[in-house]
Amino acid sequence: MTPQAEAPAKRTDRIVPLRGVRGMIADKMLRSLSEAAQLTHHADCRADALMARKAALAEAGIKVSVEDLILDRVVATLLNHTDLNGTLKGREVHLSGAVHLSIAMALPGNLLVAPAIFNSETLTLEERSVARKDLADRARNNKLTVPEMTGGTFTVSNLGLSRVRYFTPILNTPQIGILGIGRIDEVACPDGKGGMEFRPVMGLSLTFDH
Image (cartoon, rainbow, N blue to C red; front, side, top):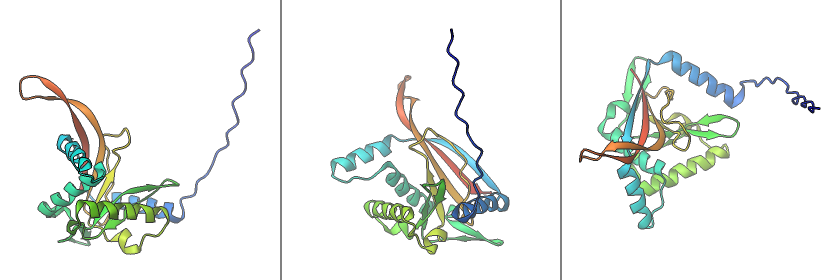
């Protein structure tokens, strides 16, 4: 006789109110999509030099993450492409001479914050790494300040540790640009000799106010 399958455990419906911080995040993202003409460009980026630099720094006793190295290049890029580093206020684009770099961070409870490292162009790679870790620690302990939460001029959202290679980051309004970082894959690339070789390639997604 075939044994009778057990009935699945009864699961109840749930209602999750969007209130408090979750409600504020939901409202802000909805406003962002309704108030800004958002466009996202996706591209691949060879990560050979990035990984080689990380290895060289590690040999020299300097421990930084891939994210720290990406942030370093983002800051340098914004100093050369200043039209992406700023905020929209009414009918005016306010471009900032300093890079107040916001970093998107996921928190328990499906919360998302993006505090800023102020004047990040004045910091060394190691100093910026320390500042990023400090923001993350204070974010987890609910100790971020209002200026840190609202004073950024450009945001980076890093999903490099996930399976996501490209995505569509939503503008952290009133900022006019946000860069999404995807995972690094080994991809077949031309070797310059008529053949192919595998190289690390990272997915990038840049959303900007058109």
